[in-house]
Image (cartoon, rainbow, N blue to C red; front, side, top):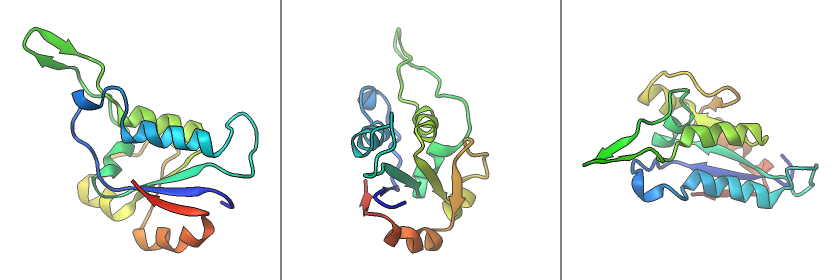
Length: 135
């Protein structure tokens, strides 16, 4: 984990139409890209993501959101945080969820590659990171 940054996200945004273009997980992907070149090993690292609170729902392995109907308009470009979590896992971002929040909100399966850990154990890992950022 030397040189990596830990990003902690504990708020889940429930809106949709307002975040069609950029949401917090898109921002996390861009931070990861800037912190480490994905095409080659980079000593600066990249980042890891810890989902806490309602944000653990971003890691549930469930179908994408259904389109929204506004009068005669169908909006099918809703952000899909689960698709972004899958992309982050594919980009070698370590993704963890808060085990206690996962149990509290639902015992749904997690996206493959996402791990779960209690908050106290995650806090013990903080010194291994270059920075710990809360978004």
